[in-house]
Length: 155
Image (cartoon, rainbow, N blue to C red; front, top):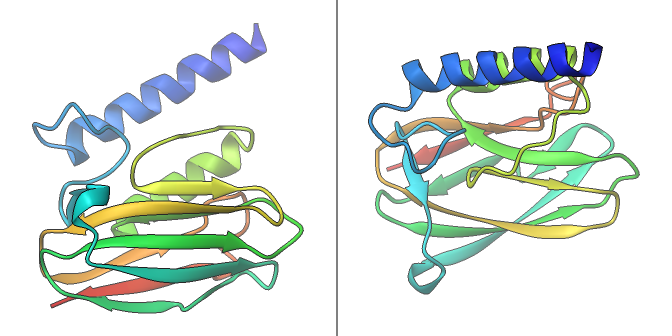
């Protein structure tokens, strides 16, 4: 019964967040369309390697891209803990980090994120369609609060 209640709470929380944050794009839940959209592998402009470590840091922590570019983030978890790279606005990431604290076993598979176990590699493809400064973070419980965040400047 507790599991059913937790699942219903998650569904309600995610559904409510999507109504306000995702506009008219029902095909890609779990990310904001305020800064871009899932990338097409055939249109990748360049690859940026990103390392996630148990020091609760991304390397690099700051990335610069051009509006319209499709970036392949080649992500590696060099740590012994599970980490993830999630793209979003600061507000979205902060809210999702709080949700992850309440439901630490929550799994997600959205196009704006990649979750990796220790020693694993993965990729995230994203096309940046708007200019501005956007964010990425690890939303595993406690990692966001420990400073595992980065910035993406789109010119």
